[in-house]
Image 1 (tube, rainbow, N blue to C red):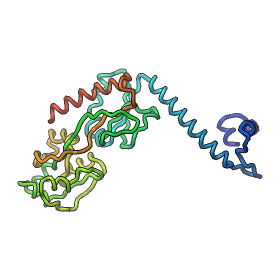
Image 2: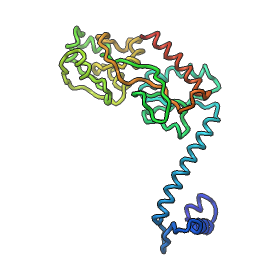
Image 3: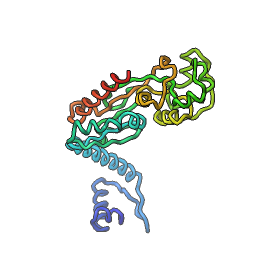
Length: 279
């Protein structure tokens, strides 16, 4: 009661009277009042749970209304690897194209709750299924072996895929397109050599650039490192298709919202230019 009075600013007695009035209205006791403390009754626990849920829904809807009427802030959520290797270097062009927007980038691989109202669009790597949201596939990709030029020189080059068995292999944890599957595609035994594993594709790519070994480079993420010469493609025709892809995700019904529509048009142009230059 004291903490409630401090937060809401009435007196302690006024809070107690409001609680008593609520109990009289409901016809049930919400608190057990003891000498130096109070605790919720079973009815109080149930009522507290319902009130908390309803207030949370009200707060989310209020934020959703506020976001839809905020015409200047564009909040983009992106997965970690895609943000670092592809999206961030291009965001300045989004800002130049739409100078009236204040672009905010949130980098996370967590699921997005669009009902919470703080994100306008999200870019995710997945199977294309996102509950209670609309998804547009913007890019698919393949994987193939890549490494740093210095590493390739250090091991004396590679003349055939079977010679990858002598290399240290870099693994991306959580990917379904694994080295084991790549060797199976090539009708080669999986060497099971020891090598580091990283939780994000961007980390495994950076490990390859540092010369830690050979990585299965995801075509979208390694494209610019290949052009810049930080990586070289080994057996580039030996590409394994990836089941997942990159999706633009937004709240159902928001496809014509001005901010979503602007971002959709911008990223479609960026993807078209990127694919034309690299594939």
